[in-house]
Length: 333
Image 1 (spheres, rainbow, N blue to C red):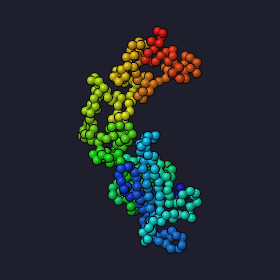
Image 2: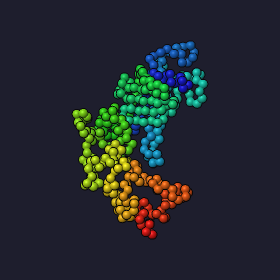
Image 3: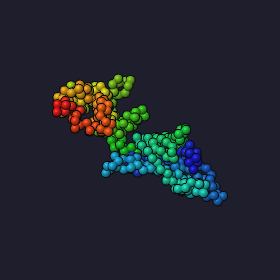
């Protein structure tokens, strides 16, 4: 069955509009063959028919575990349309299929559904699908299928596909700007959607004025909208820990100055300086590497001076050595 489907999908299909734009999704049906004569009843009578595929799918919404979380849901259906009777014919392969399970019309699951702008990607039949909504009707719509060996673009003959991106459609200004940027900057928009925080509601053009090479620096300064943590911090300092398209993440290199950390973590910084231990000369980022709030274990630098069982958990160091910020105080005791 999978081989038969793969052959059919080489000339594939899609979609009619979603009835509402309040949620992201793909929907509709398209013909993937020209009208042909086919004895689908196996009674010796050939009727004019077209082969159609239908897609219905929505990506997951919200965060798993939250009350408003909605898991993804999607399926593919395929059928004939009897052009004389003007009716859909389900299960037209019944009797030819040796597969167990659902009838040939479907549903067949879609997974890993992702919507961005007018583009949808998902997995079905162990193949990767990319669908682009080019506008009204099917003429500018494209459907591409990759089976792991080759990529094939379908040929469409009727119908329409519609892809709704609720995140963009919720704000008309952001929608218009982002759709123009999607072709070249999909990665940035995906990052913004996943970890952009409040930046998700900002139109691309609000931060990016112009485009290289016409504009050498086509983006606004962070300080145009945000107050820095300290007067001494400039635009370059912001970039040490923050990225505009991943605003909810704090990440930094090993050489970020410790004084930047001290602005937000004053108590820990003061305790470290007061301890006068060897740790007081170590940059914060060397122990708290890459990911904000992450901490290296003691054995990262100190090896295993005690039995292995003791060294497995950092908290076993605390009764004798106190915290990494207060080693001198522990020694004095």
